[in-house]
Amino acid sequence: MENAQFNQRDWYEKHLKPHEPMIRSWLKARFQLEHEIEDILQEALYRVLYASLDEEIRAPKAYLFTTARNVALMRLRKSKLRNEINLEDFACSSIIDDRKGTVDQLCNNENIKILDDAIKSLPSKCRKIIVLKKVKGMSINSIAKQLGISPNTVRVQVTIGLKKIRAYFEFIHGDSTLLERKNEHGE
Image (cartoon, rainbow, N blue to C red; front, top):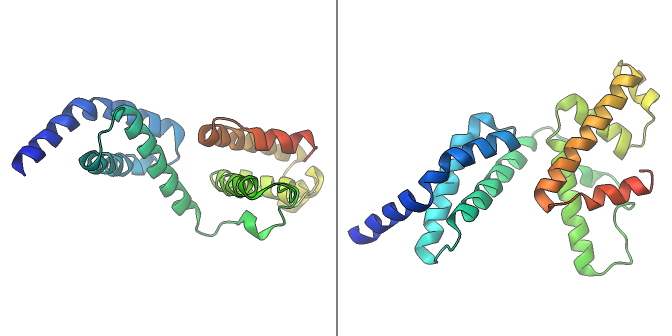
């Protein structure tokens, strides 16, 4: 048992510890969880070390980054669940094509969940404007009047929000095809 602990400590020192500063910077640059970065890193390290007991990890750096990303996303989702608008309450028929098979439908459902998470990750004002514009279909002038702000502010916030949502999608999927398909149809 003592030998296994020693080997695991050596494995950590060799394969994980050198990447800790890089992963801290990477997490800070991508997630609005500044105060939780250390906790995310520690949980990711624990998960990778625990997994290394059962199986050989061929790419420890990649495994650590993927695990840290998943932990951060999980925490981000949990932190955004409080008092938030849930897109599942709205009709999403324009996103889902009923003619597609079950696998496609599941992929679309996952995209809706990711889109919901992306919107929830926006700052409060921007999120409210995006929901009013893109989900409820309100005009820029109606939103401006309702929120007591200028139409130009609404336009700017929509642009910022869509850029952040696209970046979120690209980070999760490596692309933003759902958003591009929706924008092709003028939605």
